[in-house]
Image (cartoon, rainbow over all chains, first blue to last red):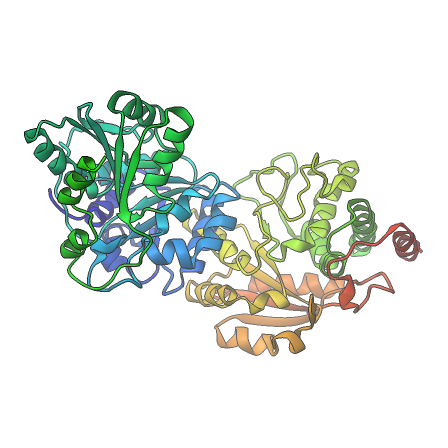
Length: 306
Length: 269
């Protein structure tokens, strides 16, 4: 409980690996910190360290997938999605291969390593690739379920995990549906649609707003592509205005995906909270989230602004 | 023994010219240079069966230099993976024969390629999967010489040696030319052999148009345990068509009707 989603990823991968012998893991010299090392320790024959070579990592995973393996190829989100983008595009998505691209240390909560290491554009990039499914679990419980769902789903998928530990907002018996968003708190004054570790912050904000008489609906939109369009439309229709929040650039990510659906199906005002088209910087991850406005306080402020 | 392969390669060259002329675009030079390698692999070496194209025990081929797709398609059609009459639909919007290989819609294609430098990594993955499953298949990868300027090739060269992938047999189609000119004018690739040897590979150099030499090199590669083999195939870009041979201008330009007729007359002579 209250652990980082990357930690949950490593444990979950070892867990699904125990029952599915086709699952293999590849990493690029970061297994100790992406936590794929947990799988590597349990199944050394099915783990391949590719060294510091992300392009080779992704295309090797593709080759394994052509032979029926289910590769989880993990590294920091920024290297997976930016350095190895061509490999993900041409050797994984174009041939629709069953590779799970795992990006950890995503977003400014990555912390002290600074802007070079904090993926802010990964969701937008991965979302733009045909055939790619994009998932950002809210907490450790959901991260485990996402890994299990990824092992079952056939096709390319991007899984985004965080370095920083964050509050658990789900019960262990939470019924996860990969392609359906989750209404975590009902309300009709405003809909707050969040993903990743912004979900607990959205719940905090809703709690505080309720004390002020504003009934906010909180949606955990763990799967950003394909997004649960019906749920987004319902939020627009029933709440009349929407705030989105993600620990990523507000260019092309969750907020953009929500706006696309809202514009086409039920136009209502939307405010996006995210990294405002800037890179991150060094500092403790939790502090950076607040500094960049990825906080309950900022959600409340934005909700009241329109 | 090689009479059949010789005839097949000749037919493949005819097919290449006909399909490129019909398409009006494409890459004759590198298709013709790789033609004999593919002919030997598909018709003498590879365990592939058009009636069971997904056989998990089959040998695999990754055409890393995906722009030589016409040569691959000619071989696959000849092998019976799809009708030869479809070849002239290459690159048309109504055709499944894409400009570069697409594994999802073209029978017999083991990997989609086109973005240079990725194929060797993919072949490594296939070889690792074969080892995991204790299958005895071989994975062939055919790269261009210009292609090895891509950094990823050297990442993959490291990986193949690190994992001792002795069921991986890679070729460099060393025709010495790439779009902008001679390899060594554009970006020096030589000495290819020394580089791969330094990376831990077993390396052979052969005449890439000598069927016996190609065949023998593959057997030597199969007999080599514990390390991957690179076969540097010395080839002639545009091989078989006099006015295309060693002409960099024929890298990515299709022959017009008149040129095609002249080329076909030479090939059929």
